[in-house]
Structures are given as C-alpha cells and as structure tokens.
Length: 458
Ligand SMILES: [Zn+2]
Image (cartoon, rainbow, N blue to C red):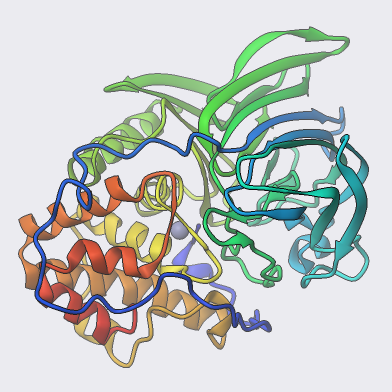
C-alpha cells in the first residue's frame, strides 16, 4: 500500500502493540559465506505442493453496495492443528466507520465441530476480527480438510480503503475470510490494527475466482478476468491463479486496454479517457523492475483506476490504484515481488514489503532522497503497531527503510547488492520471509548488513 504522501492521516493512532515472537529471527554470525545454489537458486522456488486450494464466489448486488460470497477451502497443514482461523479484515473499525463490514453465515464441512469469533481488534458492532472453526479431530501434517463459508460483504462509501463503492466502481480486497496460516509457524491471530497499512499474513493458495456482476459492467481482478457467460441478469467472470495469498476485485464502467510485456498479460481499466497511457507506464515500470528482481511473478497484472482517493493498494496480480502518479504505480508493481511472491507478516515485519517497494520506486524513477536525514534515529524493523502514529510508521518504514536499502546498495556495490536481492527473492519465493532471510542473503556483504543493523531492521 502506498498512501499519497500529501495525504497521510496523522491523527490515526496505532493502539495495538504486537508482542509475538519472531520465528527464525537471529543473527548470522561467523565469516561471510558466499552464496550457494541452495541460498541462491537461479529461479524462484516453486510454491509449496500442499498449499491450500481456495474457490471464491462473489455476487455483487445490482446497486453495487454489497457482495454475497462463498468460499470453499481445502487446507492441508504442515503442523498439527485442531482448528481453522480466518481473518475478517473488513471488520476493522476504520472500514466499519465508512460503512463496510463482513458477516459470516453458514459454515459447512464434514470435520466442522464449532464456529466461533474472536474480537481481535474488530469494531464492536461486528461478529469479530477472527473466525475460528473448531475441528472434530486434529489434523496431522499432510492431512486435509475442506470447509465452505458463506458470507456477506458490505461496501461502504468510497475512500482510501480495501472496500468501497462510488458512482463508478465497486471494489474489495481481502473481502473474504482470509486463511491466517503461516507455514512452519501456525495460526496468526494478530489483531486488526486500525491503520491504513496491511497487517495480515496469509499463505499462497491455488485460487479460483468467480464473480457475478451486474450486466454492462467490467470486472478486473486477481488472475485476470474472463467473461464466461450469463447467469440471469448478471454476467459471470472467472479467473484462476496458481499461487495467490489474497485477491481483490473491481467492478465498474471501465474503459480497458490490454497489452503484454514478455509473458505477462497487462490489463488496465480506467473510468474515463484513454487507459493506454497508464498501460504504457505500467509496462515500463514492470520491465525495469524485472531487471532488478527477476521475472514478474504472475501471468497477469490487472490495474483498476479508482477515483482520486490518494494512493494504491496491492494484491497478487492486481492493483487498486487511487492516484495517477508514477511513484504509486511503481510502488504497487514492486509489491508483486515483495508481498505477492515473497510473502511476509505485514503486521510484524512491514519493512519486508514496504521498505523494498519504496526502494524500488527510486530504481525506476531515478529519484532518491538524501539518506542521511531519513536514517537519523530511525527504527525500521518494528511491528506496525509499535509506531506512535501512522506518520511515524510511514516515515520509518517507507522513508527510512528505502533510504536504508539504497545506502546498503551504495556501500556494498550495486551489482553485488542487486545479485544478493535476486538470491533473496528466488530463495524465499511463495514463502513467508523473515528479516533473518534478508540477512542470510546479504551475509557476504558485511557493509550492507551493517547499514541494516544500524537502521534497526536486523
Ligand atoms: Zn506499499
């Protein structure tokens, strides 16, 4: 996510501190080691074989203000568990205040014993922030279960949020109960911090999307969107994704433009004028970022231009773009590597996606800020809830974090640093990375590691 710099809301207090342990985080000591084939694969490692399989059905109401949804999940844990935990993002107080929210209906499955909700920072008027499904018997690693969850999503008045609707567009991201599992760790129950930043950690899943939209409107979504037929008065759109850790959908009266960059299909929808210019700019940014981080991770990239709410919100292979600037566009495309492919717990380690996406802006635009001022007294590596305000969070993680990476690159040498980042991206593809993974990728570049330590990232 990138909030337009001139419109940062400083009054939002981050009330919740995250105190969870950080698995695997530790110093890598000893002599600098050169990259090995294992620490530096030539191409991204494959998504986990046993990843969840998620089928999502969304039906947008004719008035564009609500979505009837159904989610079928096949889940195969890598650790024993006797429950399933889903994050109800739309129930965070800021979204509820704008009129959004999610209400879970029937939950079905042969193994389902109980259905409960935990508050987890959600607005008090809602069911809660976490849906917890108790299972009749514990699943052992490698065993599967399947559940189906019906839900209803309200889309509030358009604002800079994951959910909203206005006269032109209805959109939602993280609009379904989001599976809150982290490989090797287990369930993530972090509260819904009331902030503009993302706080979720979710695994990549083999995902299909089916959207019923009022006739005459165009759908843009994760995985691309193919119009496949009609269902009554609605038009049916579908997509599938090999590995997506979340999805977003925009339905509106878009003018679309399509193109391809290498093997990537680019689809851009804009409510007015000619979307070709946006398509061109997205293509340039994507091509440039590929030179630094490797091949773009998905088959498609869809971009829905919303009204000027200021900023952009990234989802796997899909961007909700609410400002027209080059910087925001580049930032969100960079998130396809840092969040889309290399996942992280966005609440616990926000710098792993936001500092890198902000750093990437400078690689494309050629503009960078003087790192000295940005790095003074900065603590880049805190959880999102530990910063005193949204402004402090943006300043440290976006400003300080990107300056830190640019300085590390300058100190280590750009070629070596760029190669080390490629190693990091390839070795941690489709996983959930932790700061120690960055340190491992940079350990043969002690000057870079020193910069990251100084800035509090490691
Ligand atoms: Zn961002």
